Length: 406
Image (tube, rainbow, N blue to C red; front, side, top):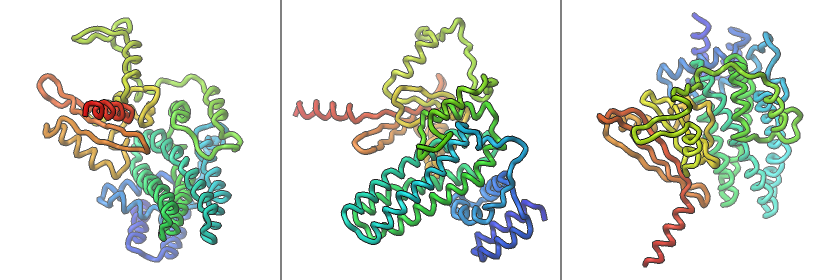
């Protein structure tokens, strides 16, 4: 039996609720060690054979525990995750800072609140739970900057599984705050699960994701990641030597000019920097400034479902980084949203729909997200345009004017 088949059989045994310690012992006898690439291939094959992402996600903590400590170290090069300021160094040190935050802040305030549910203990716990939500920036960088390059190399299963778990953690963080605020009896169950999942994700990022990134990202990829990281932001890296924003900036400044990234390069085919339209002509620089002044974010997806353009205004509703150019739009959304995206694209391509509108609220802010099927003169589908705008101020103005006329 091939090595991969043996690994798959172990996963299926776990899936069928075999004794964990027995499976772990069998793994250690059969393999001794396994690299992250084999784990990625294994997860991908399971999904291709029909196992839902949610099932692989459910197994992820289990098989990560089996594989933990057995992933072979990469000795062929100086490990980039040991280079101060490097994006991967910063990412891993954020995990150190996160673990420290859990141990020195959340674990302590949570423990005190369980012993004595006083108002002061409650406020301290809520403050630490709110502080934990900075973790979202760490996950956003992983999802928007690291995953596109793994997908480029055909490694799709680990990103899907990790993103699904990230979303679960996001929901658990929100629920933990809500449970404590509302004095819910389930707050301990929620917080225990949240802390467990966060710590398990730290292991997955350090033991599985890191080797995949080292093996598959090129020097020019890391430079682009470094350039885009500050746009999303950092978390839990304060006071950690070599992991501050200034350390990241210093590393970036020290990089040589990179070879052009052919996947992201868009050639200017216009004459002398002008773009000609049927209705007029504009300088390329004017177009860039115009697009980035429009009060909404624009994103264009071609008929191949790949992102080919987005505007870069000063206050984007959703963070966009240039690594999404050429990325399948499905991979730009959490796994649970993919069926909705696929249905919309199918409806646009078949002609059933020409437009979809969604509303989203975040605190006092109101967002309108609109999707338009783009068609040529003959009505053939050529792509999808997404517009996203924060409209709470506009809504209030309209509301006031309407009330004046009544």
